[in-house]
Amino acid sequence: MIRAAFIGVDRYEDPEIRDLTGAVRDATALWAVMSDSIDGLSASLLTDGEASLAAVTRALDETLGAAAEDDVVLLSFAGHGTPDHRLVVADSRACDLPGTTLDMGNLAERFRKTRARAVL
Image (cartoon, rainbow, N blue to C red; front, side, top):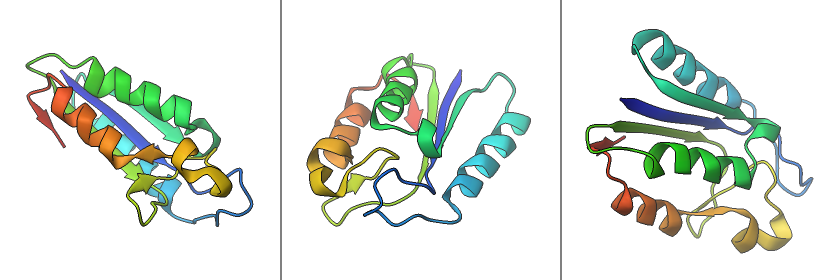
């Protein structure tokens, strides 16, 4: 099975975080191409307000966390990142980046723990 999550954030709830213009388009285009091209793909698409920290974490659980030994996981994130290696999600707060963003260390740990055959 191929499990996938495509995430794109153009609009951020916090006015201190500048909005983007192409992240949702990029995530949606990748989701559409992969969904049309790969039979049996289990894929989620999270954009803007749907891409909260809780929803992104859930998507990681449903892809990396639920993967079996023969599964392949595809992950795509389009949006802001921070200089200290965090992914900025729709409900991130500039005044609390450590508490409201996805730490790349957390993501790397999920990569190490997944049973998936491959992660892209």
